[in-house]
Length: 274
Image (cartoon, rainbow, N blue to C red):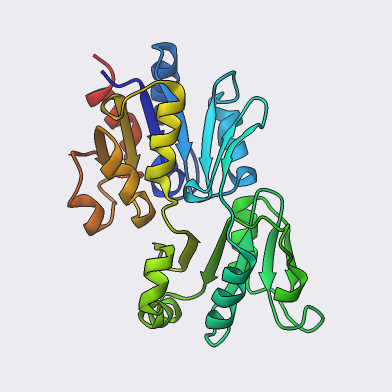
């Protein structure tokens, strides 16, 4: 019996207009009424998740959210941070030095700060893509240099953001040892995310399930992107959206409809409601 459902946001919970459809909303409310725990599990920071938590009523006692692809687990009613795993300053410097040789933007963030790393904040400008990303996560984008960061910055991930062709080049150039030392995922065509090794949605979901007293056999996870791979693999029932990546579809226990066809609601109807 499924007691906990982890749901990705972009490409899964919401449609292409970033909207939770009435059918998906109702399915989630019905599941909550039946005692099923719902956890949003996303690459977004808290500010980019908050509107959906409010809309879905996921801010009650013992409600949690997994943000930054698993780098942070937060209790939503009290905002207590259960776990937070930041990158080391030396690693941020190294990742920046590597990335600055390419045309893509480089940014880093935690739950309070969204920082665009530039050589000179006085002359640098914000691209439309970064402006759009700032709107998506509901956070003001500040321009800083790598030297403005310090050991207390507690930044959870670094992002390379750019056109698909630009990120294709960066992805191909990433040194092999980076793959051994960091968790690196191409979560969108325009986005490469880098976090602490061993930190991902799957490890965070396992920790949260244990914290709540659930076995992984009692967990369903729904996702569509490469950053959902570990979560889908870890869950007792891994459900992939029809719009999911080819790699993700290869490990799906089940496949639901796309995010444009109320796929989350379809998954609940087939595998939660009895």
